Length: 207
Image (cartoon, rainbow, N blue to C red; front, side, top):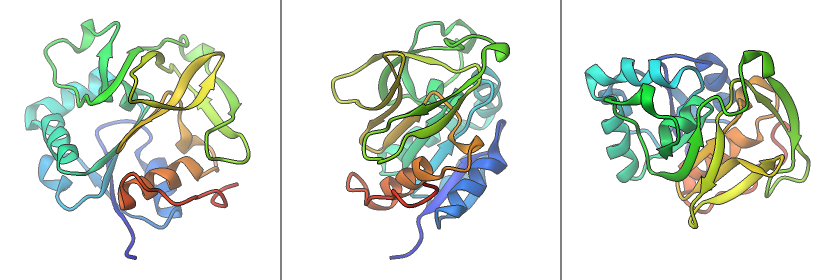
């Protein structure tokens, strides 16, 4: 089977780290800044950063509606931290995003910076559905998932709140998996992108 063709939204955030992680999983990877660069992709990572800045940078070229359309045509999407905010159907404190397109589609309610400021950043080892060993996770100004819809699978929780979720070909995480050496969550996304709702186990990668 050929390697999945994956993109990383390259408007802001830890773009190089996501590119490296996906390549470590055997994917062909390119960066995406314009709608035309979505062509042929099996999946797209929307990284962390500032959700408002990303929305403003994407707006002039209509990038987020194009991402939404590509997802409807079968492209998988993985949103981390700010990317999760942009995937969420409902943002509890969305005033700063008013007037700008988001991607949407993930039936969750999130609150921006729900875990506090930069000074409140922390790391945690998370038990994750389908993984034998806990996943190291870095939380930096992370959003809180306050509600997950009935069709959303909660893959991991921290202090009783969901922090990694999946809904079909959408994957979301409150944290930054790209900032650790563990590639298992990126590997899961590569499998979702390549094989739809039937990912093969990626347990050995980065374990």
